[in-house]
Image (cartoon, rainbow, N blue to C red; front, top):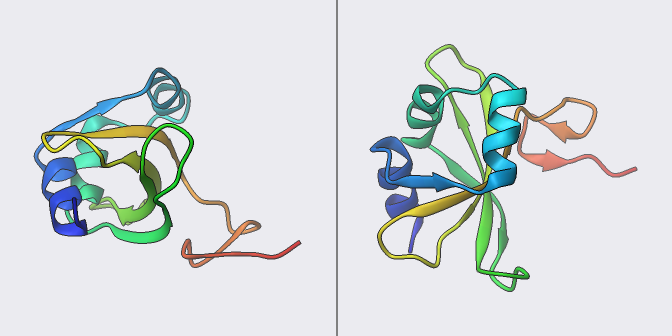
Length: 103
Protein backbone atom coordinates (compact mmCIF):
# COMPACT_ATOMS: atom_id res chain seq x y z
CA UNK A 1 0.00 0.00 0.00
CA UNK A 2 1.36 3.44 -0.88
CA UNK A 3 0.63 6.91 0.47
CA UNK A 4 -2.08 7.55 -2.13
CA UNK A 5 -3.89 4.40 -0.98
CA UNK A 6 -3.58 5.47 2.66
CA UNK A 7 -4.92 8.94 1.83
CA UNK A 8 -7.84 7.49 -0.11
CA UNK A 9 -8.79 5.05 2.63
CA UNK A 10 -8.55 7.62 5.43
CA UNK A 11 -10.49 10.28 3.53
CA UNK A 12 -13.27 7.90 2.47
CA UNK A 13 -13.68 6.23 5.86
CA UNK A 14 -12.13 2.91 4.85
CA UNK A 15 -10.31 2.59 8.16
CA UNK A 16 -10.83 0.93 11.49
CA UNK A 17 -9.62 1.79 14.96
CA UNK A 18 -7.59 -0.34 17.29
CA UNK A 19 -9.09 -0.38 20.77
CA UNK A 20 -6.28 1.96 21.87
CA UNK A 21 -6.86 4.42 19.01
CA UNK A 22 -10.61 4.54 19.64
CA UNK A 23 -10.00 5.31 23.31
CA UNK A 24 -7.46 8.02 22.44
CA UNK A 25 -9.74 9.61 19.84
CA UNK A 26 -12.53 9.88 22.42
CA UNK A 27 -10.18 11.22 25.12
CA UNK A 28 -8.69 13.78 22.74
CA UNK A 29 -11.99 14.76 21.15
CA UNK A 30 -10.89 13.76 17.63
CA UNK A 31 -13.87 13.03 15.41
CA UNK A 32 -14.14 10.67 12.45
CA UNK A 33 -14.89 13.76 10.34
CA UNK A 34 -11.54 15.28 11.35
CA UNK A 35 -9.75 12.06 10.47
CA UNK A 36 -11.35 12.09 7.02
CA UNK A 37 -10.45 15.77 6.54
CA UNK A 38 -6.83 15.26 7.59
CA UNK A 39 -6.57 11.90 5.84
CA UNK A 40 -6.89 13.25 2.33
CA UNK A 41 -3.52 14.99 2.43
CA UNK A 42 -1.45 13.08 4.97
CA UNK A 43 2.29 12.75 4.57
CA UNK A 44 4.45 10.00 5.98
CA UNK A 45 6.59 11.25 8.86
CA UNK A 46 8.09 7.91 9.94
CA UNK A 47 7.84 4.46 8.37
CA UNK A 48 7.87 1.25 10.43
CA UNK A 49 8.00 -1.60 7.88
CA UNK A 50 9.20 -4.06 10.56
CA UNK A 51 6.74 -3.01 13.27
CA UNK A 52 5.88 -5.62 15.89
CA UNK A 53 2.51 -6.75 14.53
CA UNK A 54 2.23 -5.32 11.04
CA UNK A 55 3.95 -2.77 8.79
CA UNK A 56 2.85 0.72 9.80
CA UNK A 57 3.73 4.36 9.47
CA UNK A 58 3.20 7.64 11.27
CA UNK A 59 1.40 10.20 9.15
CA UNK A 60 0.65 13.88 9.60
CA UNK A 61 -2.44 15.59 8.29
CA UNK A 62 -4.43 18.74 8.98
CA UNK A 63 -8.16 19.19 9.48
CA UNK A 64 -10.07 21.95 7.71
CA UNK A 65 -9.53 24.04 10.85
CA UNK A 66 -5.76 23.41 10.54
CA UNK A 67 -5.64 21.09 13.55
CA UNK A 68 -2.58 18.87 13.11
CA UNK A 69 -3.11 15.15 13.64
CA UNK A 70 -0.64 12.32 13.87
CA UNK A 71 -2.01 8.89 13.06
CA UNK A 72 -0.07 5.68 13.24
CA UNK A 73 -1.65 3.38 10.69
CA UNK A 74 -1.11 -0.28 9.77
CA UNK A 75 -1.16 -0.68 6.03
CA UNK A 76 -0.85 -4.42 5.46
CA UNK A 77 -4.58 -4.96 4.77
CA UNK A 78 -5.40 -4.13 1.15
CA UNK A 79 -8.98 -3.01 1.85
CA UNK A 80 -8.64 -0.83 4.96
CA UNK A 81 -6.04 0.82 7.10
CA UNK A 82 -6.03 0.35 10.84
CA UNK A 83 -5.50 3.41 13.02
CA UNK A 84 -3.23 2.23 15.85
CA UNK A 85 -3.04 5.54 17.69
CA UNK A 86 -3.99 9.15 17.08
CA UNK A 87 -2.97 12.41 18.71
CA UNK A 88 -2.21 16.06 18.18
CA UNK A 89 1.60 16.50 18.02
CA UNK A 90 3.01 18.66 20.79
CA UNK A 91 5.50 21.40 19.89
CA UNK A 92 7.78 20.33 22.76
CA UNK A 93 8.25 16.97 21.01
CA UNK A 94 7.92 17.86 17.33
CA UNK A 95 9.23 20.56 14.99
CA UNK A 96 6.32 21.56 12.73
CA UNK A 97 4.74 18.20 13.54
CA UNK A 98 7.23 16.60 11.16
CA UNK A 99 10.58 16.16 12.92
CA UNK A 100 11.11 14.69 16.38
CA UNK A 101 12.98 16.94 18.75
CA UNK A 102 16.03 15.30 20.24
CA UNK A 103 16.23 15.22 24.05
